[in-house]
Amino acid sequence: MARPGLATPPLLATCGLLAPAFSASGFEMRDLFAVSAGPVVLHPRMAVVSMYSDNVFYLPSDSPLEDLGLIESRDDFSFILSPGLNVRLGRPDGDNRIDFNFRYDQILYVENTQADSGNYNFELNATAKGARLTYDCRNSLQYLNSILSGYAATIEGIPIPSGNLERYFVDLDHDFSYALSPKTRFLLGGLYRLRDYPGAELASRTYYNSDEWRADGGLGYGLSERIQLQTRVHYGQVSRDPVSDLVPTPPRADAVGGTLRLTGSLTPKLTGRIWGGYEYRWFSNDEEDDGYPVAGVDLTQRFTEKNSLTLGYDRGGSVSATALTTSSAVRDRFSLGFRQQLGTANPWFVNLGVRYVRTEYLTSDLELDNFQVNAGVSRMLRSWLSVFANYAYEFGNRSNFDYDVNQVSLGLNLGY
Image (tube, rainbow, N blue to C red; front, side):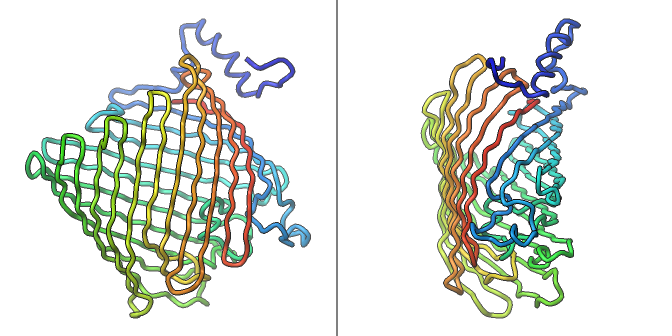
């Protein structure tokens, strides 16, 4: 219930009025968000968000774009409407299941209406477990036509941001595991990534279209019922094609490497994986070849049933997506997140997080940094309805300027 003197959001007020009416007629509001059709369960979803940003286009503090009339305002309010649908076949925790997710994001700005955009997100994930064979896949397709933001604004950004950037992203990731014995498993995996920038504007012409694939294989050995030791080797290629005819086609990049991984429940309350290894990358024009160590940590510590701490770190190689930076790089990513639940009936949730990314280009002195901190609070009013408030600060640099952004968002989520 809203406190005296505070306005209730219209959509939230509507939900509050409809819930008793549906209950009186024997129909629960929650039934709208969980529809069963035989073994298939459909979960419609909707998010409504209002956001303020003091730097919509991720510009330097002294950018002349506003004075020149190229943008309406450096800061702005935006409204995001995100309808979605989850279709699941099988139990959420079952050995055999398929999940399909769709989300559409309609972004509307108050002043910079030229930056209004609609973004489409599709996901298809599946798991199948037999007596010996296990298969997992994660697939996604995105069509985006929005402002580059966050980490992408730092690493893949253009020197002078020019509004929305049209792009298609395809990610396919598949893993197979076959039990050779009670403790030994054969591992095989592969991934494919496509990045396509079809627009004709200046922003798109700064990018390379790219195809990346990688295959890996190895063995896993069970040290205990909950911990597995894995050794993997991988080989992959990245091919890039410039959007602009004025930019030469860069050489193909090949990479080979190996890792040793420890994965599973390291303690009753600590789960995740730790890995380390080495990778060597070379280019088809016999230039810019180099080797570097790779490593990572992905751990979650549950102190109680109501709070947890997540630690993430990874170091690996990459190839730049822009024609304005040297091609081969090594990235270090660090993240730390804390989550706390308060109460049981209609609980509150508090989330705190920090992330730092550093990218070092191997054939030049260029180094790029990105730092983010997030703080948020949410409350579950019903099992199908929650409201939230978030604050985020980000600092980053491109090859020719630094920028910082403050964002505040308020919203609600409908659905499971």
